[in-house]
Length: 129
Image (cartoon, rainbow, N blue to C red):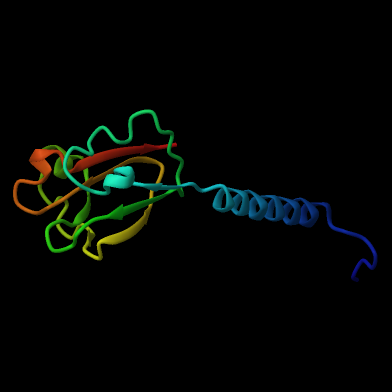
């Protein structure tokens, strides 16, 4: 027999938790910051120190502005970052010249895979909370 006018306490808890989770997600999305990598210079040589002094949070957006005929952006792992190579195989390569990339919690490594560019400083490590 159905209970009319009564709320199951377990259902009320689950509903409340789901509601609070949705609010939490909405606040995090609304609070995401947008950063232009390299500021007015854009994604170019010697950007390695650009993240210094900035605090990044998962969901923040990095905007990479560059000339796509001479640069690109590759989201790599720690090995790709340290060795300046596209690693792992299948890493996402961005080539639009105006790429917006959301960071995830932890280290986010980006390099240019054009020959010699990463070794000349076209790489950054963004550590997001």
